[in-house]
Length: 223
Image: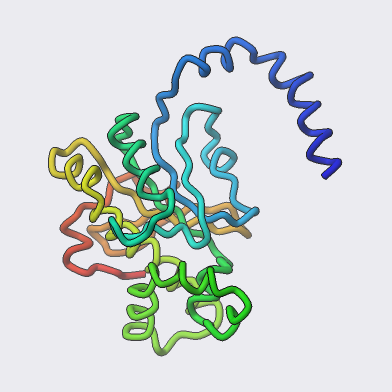
């Protein structure tokens, strides 16, 4: 806790003081470039990964970067998505999973969650992910199986996003794009889903192309 307090004082004395005009301008409103949906994992720092400043990302975090289908949960995810799209006019939504995800490990091994009933209930919103893995990847195990689960879950959550009325309306009018990313903790690499190739490809080696609704509707959940 002491480290956090010292960090606040450092921020106030050094960072804020040198960027006072920026923060004063942000007090008048925000115009973030994208909604970034990712895991609560402490090893993930969206602003660090994307090198964005305060005011540039609207961030939604929870265990497993999950987006419950519209009306399926009473949490803040739906409200956050609605505000981002309708209230802020965001034109890009990124769902970003990551390697070594504890939530996805729990999805694969529910017996480890006996003392975490709330997390068990939450992971119901990733049930489609679990079933896809069981049907398509029964030959995988260990790290390869977890990687496939992380990637498939990103695609499933993008599908869930489309059930939200605000998202569906903007997609229909061509005013919104969805992106599926996976961040690899140990290398810093980011992989983006290419709906044409049906694969996650290194973001640094390809142009950013949004995921189309048709790609997901056709079930292109490839690794």
